[in-house]
Length: 170
Image (cartoon, rainbow, N blue to C red):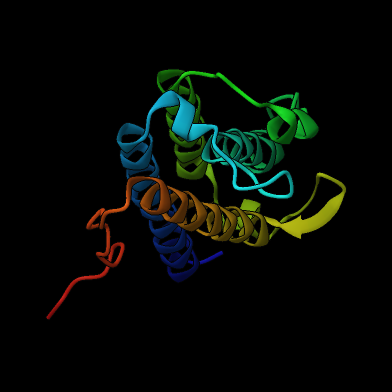
């Protein structure tokens, strides 16, 4: 693989890292805005609480990036992410998610163009490294939006979180 492939791979991985950190900061802000009770509020049994979504994101990042691409043993228990009803404290949730994102970013720094092109089997799905990274940051953004929405509903105020990630104005 040539220098241009290395450059493109690094641009992609740097962008993924910046997106994880962007959404992580917003999720952490939301956790700070809500009480421990509010974090576990759900409008109905068919919906998830912000706490469940944080557990789910931590598990997903670990399974797909840290384990799937990084080679660490997969110990995820996905059903527990959704069955938890609290009270896992705000600080514990924040630590779990921050740790997962930081470990994932370390894995991203080690990936090569070859590892991004390689095929993996993760959670029973077949994906290239590029597809795995893309899946996780899209998934992360999706649930971050849900957590932001829950927080705005619970707090009844604008959180002033609307800045585009990693894009610069001219």
